[in-house]
Amino acid sequence: MNKPISRRDAVKRLVALCGAAAALRESRPAAAAEATHLEPNDPTAAALKYVPDAKKVDAKQFPSYQPGQTCGTCLQLQEGADPTWRPCNLFPGKLVNVNGWCQVWVKKS
Ligand code: SF4
Image (cartoon, rainbow, N blue to C red; front, side, top):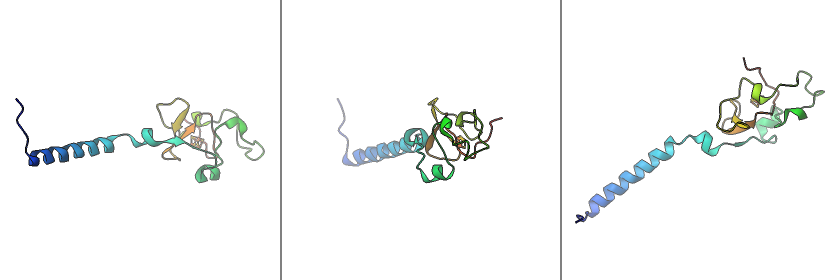
């Protein structure tokens, strides 16, 4: 037969559960849970002329741009779970398209 618990024990258990829930919430990878796709009209993206499709780069405006320069070949791109949208060192909390481009592209070695 189950032993009844006191109010004091119930409060202790509730506090312990709340602490465990808070610890789990803190340990969750924030980037994976909250990252959103980077939009070209984001202020930083606009400043760096980010486009989600490198085929739309205006070659006259950016004469240094060469076909094949994409986020997927850039040093700043990080590993990610999604093969198409991945984190970039320059845009914390956002995901860039691997086919995108911005004017600070640097060749991955
Ligand atoms: Fe893409 Fe590189 Fe620009 Fe990041 S820094 S948006 S990976 S081109």
